[in-house]
Amino acid sequence: AALILFEKVIGNLPNIGSSIAKATNYLNTLTAPFLMGFAIAYVMNPFLNFFEKIFKKSGAFFQNHVKITRILSILIIGGTVWIVIYLVPEVRDSIITFATNVTAYSDAMNVRIQNFFDRIVYINSADVNNVINRLLAPVKDISQNAPELLETIAVNVYGFGRITIQFIMAIFIAFYMLLDKERFSLKAKKGIYTFFPKEKADVILRSAIRTHHIFQNFIVGKAVDSLIIGILAFIGLNLMKAPYPLILSLIIGVTNMIPYFGPFIGAIPAILITLLIDPPLAIAVGIFVLILQQFDGNYLGPKILGNSVDLNPLWIILAV
Figure 1 (tube, rainbow, N blue to C red):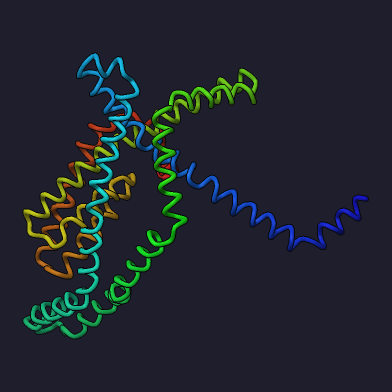
Figure 2 (cartoon, one colour; figure 1 turned 90 degrees about the vertical axis):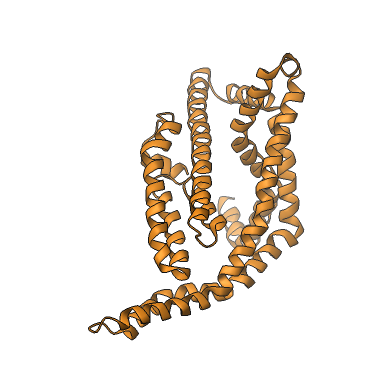
């Protein structure tokens, strides 16, 4: 009987594999909105707590009407996110403008380099230009296709209904998760005690609570830290008349969320973009970003995060 069953399974492996793949895809489609909703709710939870505390301190009405307080807090968070999303078209237009003009910027930089090295007798400016053009060749290739690539991404993300519907569902799921988070937490706790012995359930809950606090502290601390750094970068780059200050400050702020390596990752595009358009200004931008990183790493970051994230740097990088 076992041999016959084995032969039947082997003989129908393609059909079985196809059925498993279809079931997996169907399961992914069903669970994707819930997973996205949970992720959105989890990231928004510390900010929800922050606004709820502010409302409750402002009067007895909000203390006595918990649901109203929570809904108002969620709406404030949603409004803030909407404002950020409103800035995305500006960023997209700036990226397309920069990508369209990369070749012109590169040619202008070649002329500057040639004029500079022509004054130095023992250096051949043509050789220097050849080296720089080889280094910039990948950037030119990407930039030439950037507008079409961005349009394709926009069409694929916003044009096809499935992803859009899943994302809209995820937003509503996140709303209900945040609205009844205590009830969901209690159900999860009961589920753990249902499936595990009490001793193991206690250990799981202690570990989950500690992990939760570490993640929440990291999310809040890094978000506030990166927001301040992004705003300071935007102000500084504007004062320096740097090109595309919104894009550069956004890159610096977002990459600052990455521990240790983030500030360096964010500094490279800022310096390279400025180098293409205004080489002398690139030096000033590099110095400014370096000073900003030192301020963040030695003063702002430790002040905001403190020792709340009690993890080894390797585990932080892996977690992020």
